[in-house]
Length: 46
Image 1 (tube, rainbow, N blue to C red):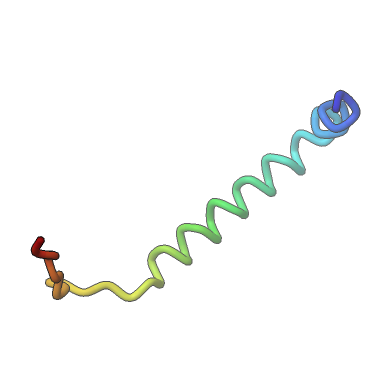
Image 2 (image 1 turned 180 degrees about the vertical axis):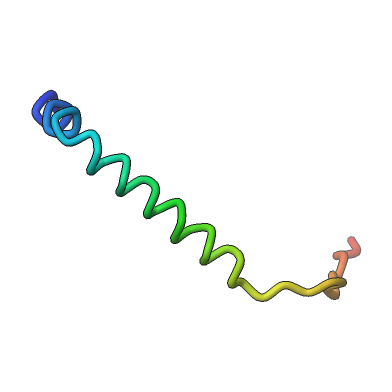
């Protein structure tokens, strides 16, 4: 496990770039989702 931490610490710029790329992709994916202003919600009745 420490080998992975050492590898990531040696390549901090690449890790930060990957995190930023993943966050950017997530924001674009979220904003691309279709949304309804007033969706029809059926409330279950017991």
